[in-house]
Image 1 (tube, rainbow, N blue to C red):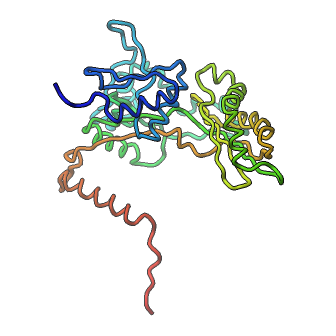
Image 2: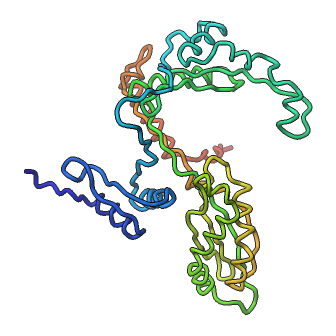
Length: 344
């Protein structure tokens, strides 16, 4: 038997964090320590646990796993390989045929991409003050493999070489297994600014009052958007920060689901502001979304084998060394140098 501990420091940290949040967690897997399984009655609690583990321990949770029926099931997604050698030589019709074959998109659906397919009447119903339409070439970048699956990536650009460069880079990265990507929960921040009028309670007391009403404030935030809550979103956390002795900001973290969330967040801030002002005695100022989206990031990593970098006249190892040197140069010289002064 091995003397390796089943409960490693990492597993202990996950179990401890879950316990502090009132969730059930236990090691699982062969030998009891390959994974930690966490149980909760709400997806929101799992999302909050994952966020704290990421911030405090740099641990990434595997969440929202689909549950399939026992036995085999048919995958509705068609077989697809994004590796299409010579795709750029096929011409427009040939490329449409190739994409239709790879994706099982009906060939006649490509007519929606023909020039003039967006008529002025339709455009006028999309945005305000329409006077016309602007067309861009729509291309397909090949060779992309993301999380073990192949993708053809549509790109609408006007600059030459962009699609070719993306496809070429994806081909190199494909040789190393492709891209590995994950995303944070769709959390955004609604902010309420509080300022202290003369004779009001100290900032510490105002902070304590907000913390004491945390559960009620989160419930009030959810009441502003019941349909968002019904779709699995809603308020997730509430933080208070002292910016100055006479100024606080209350941050409400909201799961916006598929929405960008600007209107949702502004409404929540407007609903919370009067309650916050009443309980603290401070004056509510700005009630608005934060442009800081550090809780809603996409994370992508990849590896490129040196051999995939080889080209005419240079080896892959030489190319890798050059890239490392250029990266070090960028780190050592992050800003432009001052103008050169010449002696007269």
